[in-house]
Each structure stands twice: as C-alpha cells, then as structure tokens.
Image 1: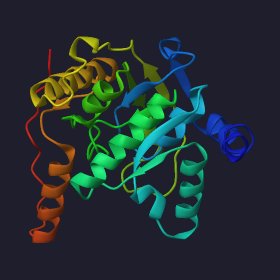
Image 2: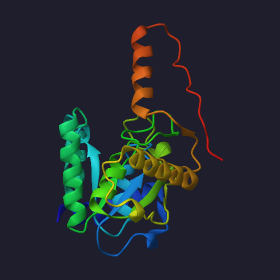
Image 3: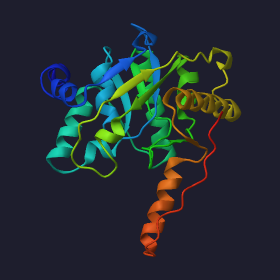
Length: 245
C-alpha cells in the first residue's frame, strides 16, 4: 500500500514535476517472470527514479547504509526503499554477500524483477567503473536474462555530497536483454563470471556513453579517502581510463 501511495500520490508526482523523467526501451522488460536489471550507479537518486518509471515492481539490491542513515531524511529513505521491495546488502563479509545472492535468487525464482548495481557502489566521478561478478553469478544460478539499464541526468539532480535535489532532466534507457544461457551450469567458473560481467559493463557503456575505467569504484574511493586523510591539500590523482571503442 505504501508503495502505491509513494509512487502515485506523494513522491511520484513531485519527482515528475521536478525532473521531467522519461524512459526509453521499457518494452525490453518482460511483462512477467524473473529478470535482472543491471544499472549504472551515479547518484542515490537512481534508486528512486527507476522504480518510479518502470511499471513492474522492482526488488533492488541496495547497500545497507541506505537503510541506516540517521535523521528524518534517513527515515524517509528507509521507508521508501522498504516500500518498493528493496533488499539491503551488507558488503562487509563474504558470508553476507552469499546471503544477498541467495535472497536475490529467491526473488528471481518468485518472478520478481531484481535490480543490481554491478559497480557495487556509486561512481565517484560520473564515470563507469569495473563491474563485480555477483551479477553474473546470480544470472547463472537463477538462469535469467540480464537487462542493461542506464540512468542519465541523476547526477545533476543529486550531485555527490548534496543534501538537496536540484531540477534537471532525467532519462532512463533500457537496453535489449542479454541471454547468457550458453553459460548455464557454469556458475562457479570465475573466468565465465568475469567474461559475463565485462559484457554487461560494455553494454552499459554503449548505452550510457560514459567513459569506462577498468578499476573498481570502491578502490578509487579508498584512494581518494586516503589522500584526503593525508592532509597534503592536493587533489587525488585521476586514474587513467580505458574507454572501449
């Protein structure tokens, strides 16, 4: 009930008026049955706009911190994420990651659309970073197609570190489903997992036009935090990129 109130009565109308969001390629999402929506991730706002514009409900794999932020804003986020069926992920241990995959597989088996950010965290600078292989493992274990999704404009709405959203045009582009059935039965093959993940990231790069960086975003964030702690006053070095042609 809260989901429908948020989507059609409270947040939905405000977001539509403020950011004029549009969606392209929604016909690529099946009307029923499980599928993985693999999205780029440039802003917290991504997790608000995708459920708003996609007609089917999405169980989005979101980091646990989105559910534990203190204060009124944190409470609002928790209520929204919970209402739309999002699943918190504790990224602190391997066993927690396995539990998250099991939850995702269960939801896919029940016919849900499950959203996932292959980069594992928000981009630190708007570029597209190396994907983690959990998306591939889930697709193989559940034997579902992967649908690439890109968010465009959400970084302008919700810049890194911002507390208030700003008016800006938001676009969502949904690409053609990627069929990995040729790899079914090979979920434990790390080479296959890496190959699939790279194929997904390439599809996201092509769809979004983002510059691709073959480094994990989490590592970049760690380096930036380390540089900030050093107190040398110099900006963190920009990591060389490798944009596919």
